[in-house]
Amino acid sequence: MTEALKSRSEGRVVVRNVGWETYERLVEEDPDRSAPRFFYERGVLEIVSPSFEHEQIARVIASLVEELAVELDIDVVGAGSTTFNREDLSRGFEPDASFYFSENAAKVRGKRRISLDAGDPPPDLVVEVDITSPSASKLPVYARLGVAEVWRHDGARLMILGLQRRDAEREGRYAEVPESAFLAPARVPGESLTRFVEEGLASGRPAWTRRVREWARELRGNP
Image (cartoon, rainbow, N blue to C red; front, side, top):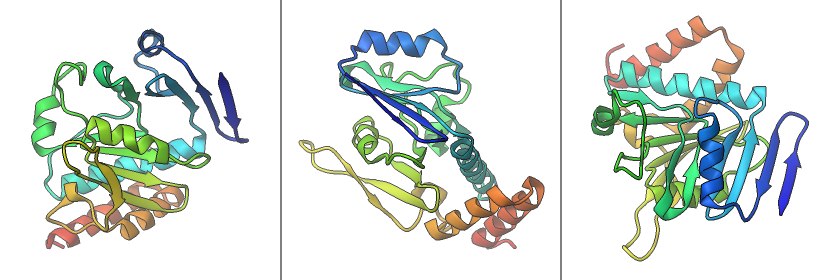
């Protein structure tokens, strides 16, 4: 069964009863593609063709993460829209952007490929832009694969979602948190991130980058 859900700017197709082998074949046909992006959960395959607006928001958020990390002296490795999947869990995703920080950054730096099946860690942070369709249904997959933090932007606001660990018999769930755990000890609130994303979409990149760096130095206490 196939569902086609489209807006004027973005396409989304959901295909059910897709076997793991078929999903893997689609992923491996063009491993370097940037679109479409595949999201797989136990037989359900979602194929998303991002719009220009979608991509611009994702790129601004990715730049924001990297600029803040550098100015706050936090080691970071950007993994972009890498395919992350685990056959034993029958789940996989390709985010709009993803990052490893500190210890996990050191673990994946220099690798040609990330394999969760081989024991590589999942990304610490995933970025999801949801202009036409909410990613709420994707959150359990991120939680099951161990993604600690999701930054979700709905076209107007950026929310920081932190994984709340549960007991061994119940999977973790996400809850909105006021600040990012990976940009500590600086306190980086979601409201400020939303503002800088808006500015990044409307401003020239050099001026915007300078403002982000100045803000990061203020957060660090070194104006």
